Length: 420
Image 1 (cartoon, rainbow, N blue to C red):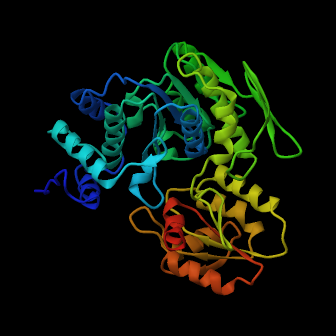
Image 2: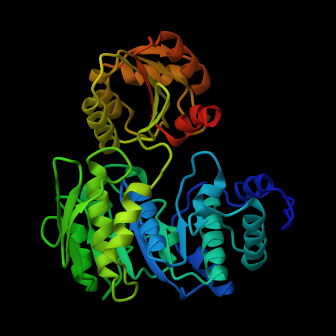
């Protein structure tokens, strides 16, 4: 019999307990989470909700949207996943991560309400965020989908606006083998009569068909809104309104302009519910911060890229930097990620690689990762763990060299924790 923590128990006890209360780490479906949410009085949501799905760019889009609403004077809840260093990163109110004590109080309330209903780790966390946001009487909550959309726990909330950042091939075991299948799953966050945004080029046909079938007015990048860059890195956005000379997003890479353009489309679509002036947008863009997204710490670049699309963005960022130094790669990946494809993207840009192991059951050990990477033309040393891999890379790097750490949130966290 698993001991149940109390509201006064340490956060670590609650998280360990949640990992044991459901037989599967992932169990898609809304029935369990919705039933508990109804018992807690969380549905229907009493606050304006922007839900964000997509293969990449969700975290930066959620962070920017929350920052814009906060700059506009609204009380804002932000829910993201996964976390990098602290579980508390997942839930923030007005830009401040909630405390251990507050999270444990929410978990205790959920434990009482769920009774016989098993919940996964992610479902517990989603309900905790919604419970705390309900308690805080927010003006707006910005919610990041964890996996897919249609059957993700976040989707128990009816979004007032749904933003899909892009569609790539990731989580194919759960979401389907192609962009059409994945697009349909992510389009599941849309609601009839409520605005929806697709922020990238080439929307999958099934995403378009689903929006049309349920009557969700869908704004598309390039058709209904667009952006352009200026020589000084400022940018312009055009949609139902126009903004010129906006400050660049604080995060690196041209893709961040595209992500920001989608956020502005969503903010514009919600103007009737949450009016936002241009000053709030201008204030939020250069102020946004998100750890592990092409983040420099000394000679080290931290990036959580773990699929082909994010690796290509990372490669573009690397190519865009001038400098004579070499790049040494510290790589750790999960077995169910497209290891060979990611390595093929990065191989031409690095002098050498050090492969570190990640914990089982999903994590690859260093030797297995080395073997898979070699088939894609990326060669290097295999060591036991990421900390050791980083030490080896530091010993190889010259004074003008840089070390790139990527492949997984777990990989970046192993290096970031002692650096921060």
